[in-house]
Structures are given as structure tokens and as C-alpha cells.
Length: 155
Image 1: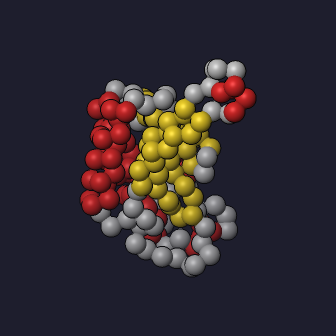
Image 2: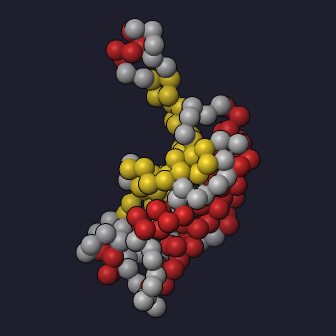
């Protein structure tokens, strides 16, 4: 892991299944996370499995229309490049973080293709793209732009 100043903020990158995932998705998602964690030294921290069950709003449950919401996906932290922090990230950390995000996108694309389902990609809770049954066209430019990981002129 690479460290910057102790107060350098992180941002949460999340890949989650778009619809309520069946229980059969948990094992391949866990396997993907295990492979990712072991595959490399992560710049900030290794990816984590997100497997949460939460009840719908109580009002909906009382009406009999509520449900248990299942969130399944993978989360990772990246260093913020928002001003003024971007100028404080050294080029080698930028490159390492870009490689981390690339590995995540590749693994999530393979998982999405394997289970034949879509994934939403969010940064700090804001949707920034999607993976459509393995196709990453919905995030390739948007994700890299949002993260500010364009390395032109760095280096």
C-alpha cells in the first residue's frame, strides 16, 4: 500500500449488481474478490466484498409491498484527486492507482459476463457508469474522467 499525507481523503468506488442479485451470485463475487485481493499490492487498500441485506422502509413493509433489499458487489478505496488534492498525488501513485482501477474494471467485467447481469459503478455514492453483461463501454471514459486519473503530462 502507498500512503500520502495522513489527511489525504479517499473516495469509495463501488461496483454493485443493478437488480436484486440471486443468492447464486454471492460465491462468484466472493471468489472474484479473493482473486483480486491476492493478485496485487493495492495502492490504498484491497477490494472488499459488499453483501448486505436491508429491509425496505417500514411504511412499505406495513403495506405489504416492502421487501428485503440485497446489495452485492465490490468496493475499493482510491485516493481523491479533487482539488486541491490532485496536485499532491505523485505520478507513480497515479499510475499505480490507474492500474488498480483497471484491474477492478477487468474483474468486474468478467464477473458481469459470467453471471450475465449488469453492474452499476458509483463513486462516493454517485452513479458514474455501468457494466452491461461484461461490456464496459458505459464506464471506460466516465470512470477515468471522474477519478481524474488522466496521466497526460505527468511523469
